[in-house]
Length: 341
Image (tube, rainbow, N blue to C red; front, side, top):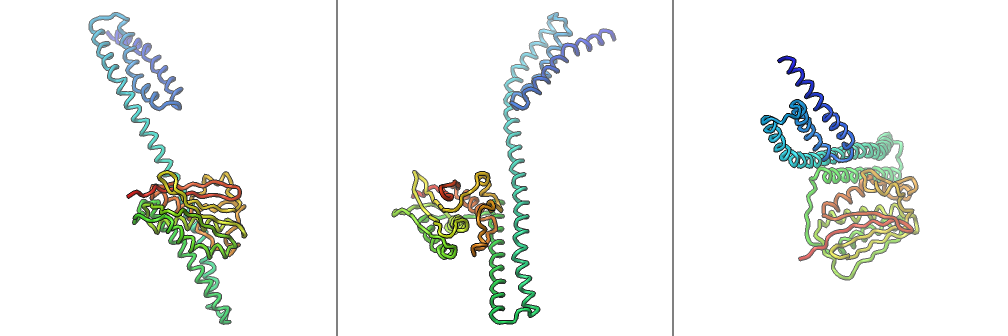
């Protein structure tokens, strides 16, 4: 009896092991090609090995017991194959989804670290300036009334810059956390652009940049938060002015395309390097050294979050934002759905 059991074990192993080895080999070959096929093979290999072992042990002697067993296994196969395919597809989708979520979390964490690094770096400059000027005033290093007034103005400018950076950081935090709340209403896109153009004209004049506006005569209705939409256009215009050389031109245009309204901000600057186009809306992006720093032209340096904030606000309006190079300069486009009563 013990010899019979030993023979059965050996025979079962001899017949089932090659099936398991073959299944493993196939699994290794297809695991990088198809997750669904891999999961199906993973489910079916034990069943095929079991059937092979039973047939091997029986010595192909199809007794009634073996027929019953094979019938049961065949029935299980008929159920297991479609079930394994369905489960494999579900697992594949879940695995892909989990991988995407993991990659998004990694990207978000990288973005947060980069943001903290940039903000920490940018906060040091105005804080150091404020501290130096305050110490000079406290130690009476500067006593002349004119100089005292100038130093006080410097402190005020740095404080305004710090306040703007904190506002940008707070806005970016709301966008990233999903806490952004929009007060949307039907507005004429032309009015928003007109207000931004009027507010940005003095900045363009200080930078020696001409400002042009091109809007259609008819109303361009969009359903938007006026403050947020003005923030988007302002960020794009200020970015265009900052990167347009003296004597250049910044143009804002509005066009209705099918059921969408398109706002275009064009500049005649040096354009954007091809390898930077993919990162233009990243937090803390400021481009390459080929672009003239705004501070050297009498313009305030940005926080590096302007374009990232613009993208977040546009997406919150179910719109899209894009950038491309022209000859010369670059073009930013904001596309929003038209509002129909």
